[in-house]
Amino acid sequence: MPTEARQDPSPHPAPDPVPGARRPGRPGHVLVLGGTGEGRRLAELLHTGGVRVTSSLAGRVAAPRTPPGEVRIGGFGGPAGLADWLRAHAVDAVIDATHPFASAISFHAARAAAEAHVPLLGLRRPGWAPAEGDDWHPVGSLEEAARAVPGLGGRVFLTTGRMGLAAFASVDAAWFLVRSVDPPEGDRPPRMRLLLDRGPFTLDGEREVLARHRIDVLVTKDSGGAATAPKLAAAREAGVPVVIVRRPPVPEGVEVVPGPPEAAAWAREVLGRG
Image (cartoon, rainbow, N blue to C red; front, side, top):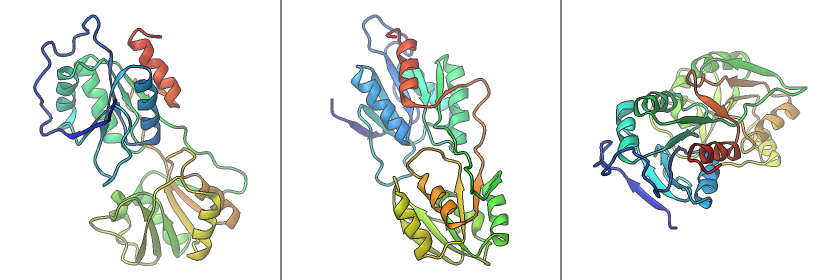
């Protein structure tokens, strides 16, 4: 089945003849709130298993890696708009496989799923844990990370993404190497160099980045996963301190699984195929 990519013109599309109803013989429909490697892998598992899957991407990356199945790009118009979309497209289950720091959509999904009476599951890759030799400085926000930087180093490898650079715009006592998939917009550190790149990254590559730019402090989010973890090992080897932003909480009452296979098994059970 070819991948269908489209931009929904409205968060309130025309409803199906019987919105939200499970009809005999109708294939199950799962909405995956994606944009992550786990979301793509989950869509592959569901699509291969004969499940109708729609992956929703926020559209913040210029050239996203689209998964198989149907793909929807753009917002829903808040929790009410998402609830309307679930009913209108006869969605049987929602799996939130967004980035661990995309907390707004996670809370919107919890409210929308409850309103539309659709089961919801959270898919979250496990977070990172410090190893022997690490010099980690956990903080609760990007703003706290910006305040911690001047006391730790003057050449910063900033890997928190392009959306949060404004938090570091007032840090003029340090130079920043900012790595991002797409060019940032808005406020940013006054002294910085932009490195456009997309993971997965290798340990040798991260060692070279730290050495070439004489990095003496790393700032990152606890995103988890293997694709961007080599920077932590490189920092450990080089004795570079790491300012790491803790994850926001998931919505209360939402079941969470660590990987796509577990999420696919949950979906099959919800759809009566497990």
